[in-house]
Length: 248
Ligand code: IPE
Ligand code: IPE
Ligand code: MG
Image (cartoon, rainbow, N blue to C red):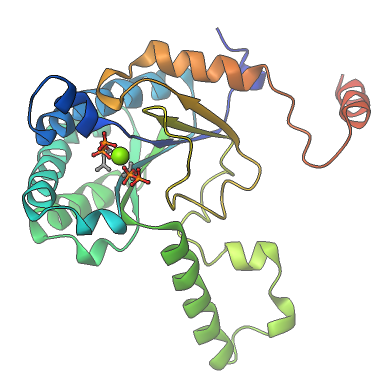
């Protein structure tokens, strides 16, 4: 078990490999997405039980809109089913559901249950489950710049006041703890436009398991790797050791 001290506060997951999982078995890609929903359920439940504060799942990227129309339509239908099927589990477990990304682009069949569950769970403090939907890290930064410039033009923001913290307050993740651990399944080792700003000091774990096969024991493997690492944030090991001595 991971020592509570070394448990990440915020875990991000790039849920990749649904299509390959299905194709490996000669089944349509959408079957992989459907099976992936079971992994989301298991990982959400496990994260909540472990005491992780925030879990952010990359479910659909800004670029994924360019996939074949049947796949996009099927994914939207699955997202709707997920939101409806998981509603009571989320509410019963004091989970707050959030979303980041260009959610205005989502069809009403997704947007409506999403908005409803966001509102119904807004007061929950057990864990924040954020779905990155129609999300891109660069798009998210561009939007933050747009909003900041708008404030500057309106006289509400002075250019000299824009530092790292102030800028971050314009990002959709501003209310979440910093991302401590970023996991990508499927064996690919890239970020694919996920939380570019937020992962500045995240520990990265790439695991060669397709998302539909990913279960809590795989999550535990990733957490163990995380716990064994030394996060230095630009300092030296000796500095970190003396800080720990001071903490007792
Ligand atoms: C991840 O699985 C889910 C989404 C991107 C929506 P993929 O659909 O990317 O699966 P692979 O990478 O093609 O196997
Ligand atoms: C990233 O996976 C997006 C999600 C997991 C939602 P992709 O499968 O779209 O990324 P690439 O195309 O392999 O970079
Ligand atoms: Mg993929």
